[in-house]
Length: 158
Image (tube, rainbow, N blue to C red; front, side):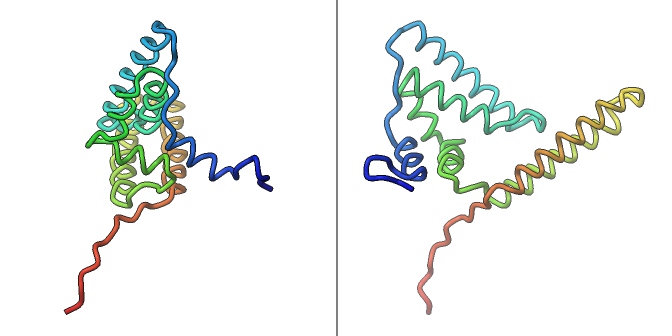
């Protein structure tokens, strides 16, 4: 039960997401966070192209690193035309568009199926089983995410 001094969990989450990032004072720590953030952005971009490398965790980690190192990079990441809206929707809990869910699952299962059947030698069957288990876990996660509906423009009736 929220008290007068303590906001409800949802209020705390929205206040944290919109509050300005807390940048570290020590220059070496800032530099290390900046390098880690740039590395995470690079891995996130690779994850958008490679089906087994995740995108979202790397972009969220990059946002956390930039929040500690550079307000400019933090702002750039959240307003970037490629993945700014993606990060903002994910952090707000709005979910993932249906088309993105379908395409992600399709590409993932095609590449996992190919890897498990063709690329993995028969005597390494435990690796194929691990790939399939990762695919099932990822599918469950994606299907449990809220489906983001694109806003529709209301046209006046004629």
